[in-house]
Length: 176
Ligand SMILES: *[C@@H]1O[C@H](CO)[C@@H](O)[C@H](O)[C@H]1NC(C)=O
Ligand SMILES: *[C@@H]1O[C@H](CO)[C@@H](O)[C@H](O)[C@H]1NC(C)=O
Ligand SMILES: CC(=O)N[C@H]1CO[C@H](CO)[C@@H](O)[C@@H]1O
Image (cartoon, rainbow, N blue to C red; front, side, top):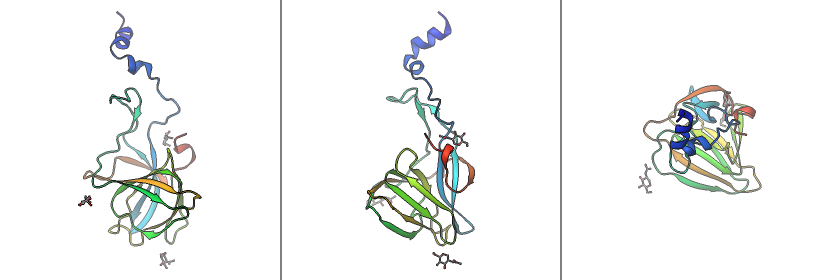
């Protein structure tokens, strides 16, 4: 029996799932960080990137390890047009926007990010009060509610990454 045939025999589902070629090697996320006590916006490439899952129900598909999480997660419903005001991230956390639109701006800066709910809706909010004096502003200028899931990071903290550039991720850095 040829090796290929043997592998197909043992792992049929792995072979059947063809790799998603339109998917980049990793996920890039917009990060609200801080430097010199001021909030920043950066685009990070998460490391390590997509791997082939062997988990039940998703065998052969692309999965990316988001690291450890901890604390209480929450599902948040923001009314259309809500103004979150100026604030710091209450904890190191993922904010995953499922729908709607978030507009993030920084005090005394022209850098801004527009985060649309959906497949590119995950951001990291890391500008806690101990690292950023003024925090950031968030408004939700959508006609509809903005829905997000907030997930605090665990003890291992910020996931592995490479900083791609200042400012939010854009265009070809995002999932298509
Ligand atoms: C993330 O950015 C890297 C570097 O620019 C790129 O190679 C990759 O395709 C991007 N990922 C996605 C999902 O677009
Ligand atoms: C999670 O929520 C419970 C109930 O409100 C609270 O007692 C607990 O301290 C919270 N845990 C953390 C890590 O914030
Ligand atoms: C110099 C300057 O513009 N400072 C402003 C920075 O942002 C904070 C918060 O919006 C303002 O209170 C400062 O006046």
